[in-house]
Length: 116
Image (cartoon, rainbow, N blue to C red):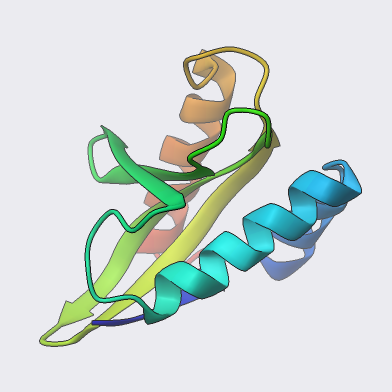
Protein backbone atom coordinates (compact mmCIF):
# COMPACT_ATOMS: atom_id res chain seq x y z
CA UNK A 1 0.00 0.00 0.00
CA UNK A 2 1.36 3.36 -0.95
CA UNK A 3 0.23 6.31 1.13
CA UNK A 4 0.79 10.01 0.73
CA UNK A 5 0.32 12.70 3.38
CA UNK A 6 -0.87 16.14 2.34
CA UNK A 7 -1.51 19.06 4.69
CA UNK A 8 -5.01 20.39 5.28
CA UNK A 9 -3.45 23.83 4.89
CA UNK A 10 0.30 23.88 4.29
CA UNK A 11 0.99 27.09 6.21
CA UNK A 12 -1.07 26.03 9.24
CA UNK A 13 0.34 22.50 9.41
CA UNK A 14 3.94 23.73 9.00
CA UNK A 15 3.40 26.20 11.84
CA UNK A 16 2.02 23.41 14.04
CA UNK A 17 5.00 21.18 13.17
CA UNK A 18 7.41 24.02 13.98
CA UNK A 19 5.79 24.43 17.41
CA UNK A 20 6.88 20.91 18.40
CA UNK A 21 10.22 20.37 20.14
CA UNK A 22 12.90 19.52 17.54
CA UNK A 23 13.28 15.88 18.65
CA UNK A 24 9.52 15.28 18.51
CA UNK A 25 9.13 17.06 15.17
CA UNK A 26 11.89 14.92 13.65
CA UNK A 27 10.43 11.66 14.98
CA UNK A 28 6.92 12.53 13.79
CA UNK A 29 8.17 13.44 10.31
CA UNK A 30 10.16 10.19 10.12
CA UNK A 31 7.11 8.17 11.24
CA UNK A 32 4.93 9.76 8.59
CA UNK A 33 7.51 9.01 5.88
CA UNK A 34 7.79 5.43 7.15
CA UNK A 35 3.99 4.98 7.21
CA UNK A 36 3.72 6.22 3.62
CA UNK A 37 5.82 3.26 2.47
CA UNK A 38 4.88 0.28 4.65
CA UNK A 39 2.36 -2.37 3.69
CA UNK A 40 0.60 -3.08 6.98
CA UNK A 41 -1.86 -0.95 8.94
CA UNK A 42 -0.04 -0.52 12.24
CA UNK A 43 3.69 -0.93 11.61
CA UNK A 44 6.08 -0.61 14.52
CA UNK A 45 7.25 1.97 15.59
CA UNK A 46 4.30 3.90 14.13
CA UNK A 47 1.10 3.57 16.11
CA UNK A 48 -2.06 4.35 14.14
CA UNK A 49 -5.31 4.69 16.07
CA UNK A 50 -8.82 5.29 14.72
CA UNK A 51 -9.92 8.07 16.97
CA UNK A 52 -13.18 9.61 15.89
CA UNK A 53 -15.47 9.41 12.82
CA UNK A 54 -12.74 8.73 10.28
CA UNK A 55 -10.04 10.68 12.12
CA UNK A 56 -6.84 8.74 12.79
CA UNK A 57 -3.92 9.53 15.05
CA UNK A 58 -0.30 8.74 14.24
CA UNK A 59 2.23 8.63 17.05
CA UNK A 60 5.45 6.88 17.97
CA UNK A 61 5.06 3.64 19.91
CA UNK A 62 7.38 5.04 22.60
CA UNK A 63 5.42 7.43 24.80
CA UNK A 64 8.52 9.58 25.39
CA UNK A 65 8.10 11.09 21.88
CA UNK A 66 5.34 13.65 22.21
CA UNK A 67 4.58 14.65 18.60
CA UNK A 68 1.14 13.60 17.42
CA UNK A 69 -0.86 14.18 14.25
CA UNK A 70 -4.50 13.65 13.38
CA UNK A 71 -5.38 12.82 9.80
CA UNK A 72 -8.16 11.45 7.61
CA UNK A 73 -8.19 9.35 4.47
CA UNK A 74 -9.26 11.78 1.75
CA UNK A 75 -8.83 9.39 -1.17
CA UNK A 76 -8.56 5.63 -1.36
CA UNK A 77 -8.20 3.26 -4.27
CA UNK A 78 -6.57 -0.12 -4.63
CA UNK A 79 -3.00 0.10 -3.34
CA UNK A 80 -3.14 3.86 -2.59
CA UNK A 81 -4.38 6.26 0.09
CA UNK A 82 -4.14 10.04 0.23
CA UNK A 83 -4.00 11.09 3.89
CA UNK A 84 -4.84 14.66 4.87
CA UNK A 85 -3.06 16.03 7.93
CA UNK A 86 -5.63 17.87 10.00
CA UNK A 87 -3.77 18.81 13.20
CA UNK A 88 -0.25 18.42 14.57
CA UNK A 89 0.15 18.78 18.32
CA UNK A 90 2.26 17.94 21.35
CA UNK A 91 0.97 15.20 23.67
CA UNK A 92 -0.13 16.57 27.01
CA UNK A 93 -2.32 13.69 28.23
CA UNK A 94 -3.26 10.12 27.32
CA UNK A 95 -6.27 11.25 25.26
CA UNK A 96 -6.51 13.72 22.42
CA UNK A 97 -7.70 16.97 24.04
CA UNK A 98 -11.30 17.86 23.15
CA UNK A 99 -10.29 21.20 21.58
CA UNK A 100 -7.78 19.49 19.26
CA UNK A 101 -10.33 16.86 18.25
CA UNK A 102 -12.87 19.61 17.58
CA UNK A 103 -10.34 21.42 15.37
CA UNK A 104 -9.66 18.21 13.46
CA UNK A 105 -13.38 17.65 12.87
CA UNK A 106 -13.85 21.23 11.66
CA UNK A 107 -10.85 21.04 9.33
CA UNK A 108 -11.97 17.67 7.95
CA UNK A 109 -15.39 19.15 7.10
CA UNK A 110 -13.76 22.18 5.47
CA UNK A 111 -11.47 19.89 3.48
CA UNK A 112 -14.45 17.83 2.27
CA UNK A 113 -16.07 21.05 1.08
CA UNK A 114 -12.86 22.06 -0.69
CA UNK A 115 -12.10 25.02 1.58
CA UNK A 116 -8.76 25.34 3.40
